[in-house]
Image (tube, rainbow, N blue to C red; front, side, top):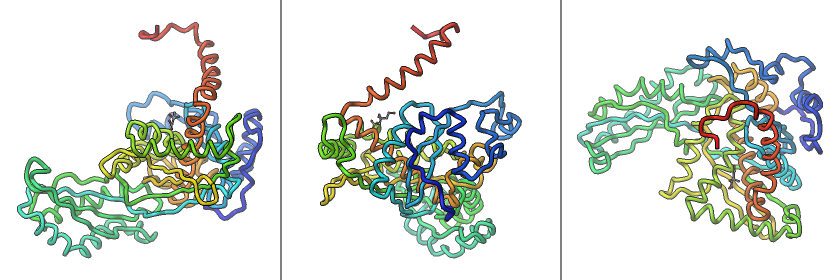
Amino acid sequence: MSTKAAASSRITGFYRLDRDERLQVVRAAAGLGPGDPALDGLDGDVDVALLDGFVENVIGAFPLPLGIAVNFQVDGRDLLVPMAVEESSVVAAASNMARLARNTGGFQTEVVEDLVIGQIQVLDVADGEAAAVAVASRREEIIEKANALDPTLVSFGGGCRDVECRIFSPEQTGAGTVLVVHLLVDPRDAMGANVVNTMAEALAPDVARWAGGRPGLRILSNLADRRRFRATCRIRPADLAIGDLPGPEVAQRIVEAARFAWYDSYRAATHNKGIMNGIDPVVVVTGNDWRAVEAGVHAYAARDGQYRSVSSWTIDDDGMLVGQLEVPLQVGIVGGVTRLHPTARFALRLLRVETAQDLARVLAAVGLAQNLGALRALGTEGIQKGHMRLHARNLELASDLSDEPPLKDDP
Ligand code: MEV
């Protein structure tokens, strides 16, 4: 992250400011003068001609609200977090929980591992073990060939690091023996799909020949379990009190709620959805591929054969509530539309991230904050109270549209 000193993200009553006042705060945090072109996309008047270059058959743009979560401190740095999301309560809950976390130093994050996986499938292999040995014996050659395809990535310190083989028996495939070769690639600041897909496609004919089989699919795996990030926080129980409920009781209920999501997949899916309520809006606004991130997190959640929560909450010996989230995050700050979309450029600037890892660290922290907000509400007054208050505002807005003909299935 940028080492430049940042203004405090602890802002009281940000929601009471009008839009111009909020923009002033955000501009200052991003180090932008009034009228800076970096702010151009914020009115939603994105150049449709630019979007026309992103996908096919473009007829317009689909604006989402862009909110700012305040109070975040991640690895000792204050951050204003941009979130593009349509769901009410999300930005408010993230800001509130970040406020509680900053009482004890905010969120701490770690890069557990940072490699993307490119898969090469080899079909009709006569002897799986022999094929794996043959491919493994070419490890150096494979790495060298892969890296020759992307000298720029290598010059930035990235590139193919390792090769792994997995064997699938005829019983598993329902056909012949299949060898799946994984290229493990350090993509530096890219999301990594283009890098590994190029490598996997180029290497597949050689790999298949060495394995004595036929090349099949060559593609990135979205089960990015070798690109994992961890966020933790410690919350003072007293800060969790709600109404008449004392903080330690609330902390205990959060722990019970987290256990529920560990042993019951039905609950885990909702629990993890709440975590993605925090992660996705930041992935979206930074121009990243949220489907890849979603696929990765949910596949990782099922890694031991049962779908489980990707976060845990416990109470430590000092009575503090300790939260931990560990998830795969395939995001980049170069490539795709991250540098092309004006709002994505602005978001990356506001977050002051200098590497893809910096961005992933923020995502993990926001996911954990969001999870805490949901569990605290669910374990106490329920989510409907706060949710419905905000929802009522949406209904009011909707009633302004009541002159319009109802949709076909509207009651
Ligand atoms: C709603 O968008 C998210 C929650 O359902 C998450 C959860 O249940 O943990 C509140």
